[in-house]
Each structure stands twice: as C-alpha cells, then as structure tokens.
Image (cartoon, rainbow, N blue to C red):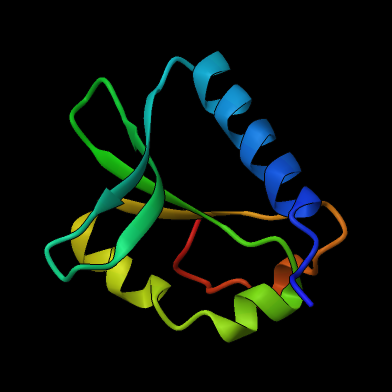
Length: 95
C-alpha cells in the first residue's frame, strides 16, 4: 500500500509559498553531481544556495539516507516537516 501523498503535498505547497513570500527563487528536483535529486532549491540574492528537504513524517525521515549528501552541494540545508513532527530529531547542523 502506497503512503498517503497528502502530508507531503501540504508540506511542499506550504514550503514553496513561504519561500516565494520571502523573495526566494525556487527550483524543484535538481539532479546533483552524485546523481541524487534534491527536492527544493532556493537561491538567495547573496548567491548562496539552500536546499530544503521535505520530510512528510518521522518514518520518511528515518528511511531516507540520501540527505547527508546534499550538504556537499549547498551553503545551507533545511528541512520542511509537518507541524506535528518532533523537531528534536532533526540534525543539529540543519536549519
């Protein structure tokens, strides 16, 4: 049985709206040199590159082993998660 896509959709839509409201240019699903695809990229006016990784649940976060590689391709790494997800599990060096 496939996972319910709605939490992921809600987080993705909210993330894109927030980034646009903050004045960022966003791109979805860029392929990295490693061949992995990062979900959201935001480009700041100062030239910094930020990756925003969407995690729809605790299980999604725990199952994903790709995101540590994203640090090699950006200046800052963020996670966008549902409001009911425990933020204490997020990596300390992520924003």
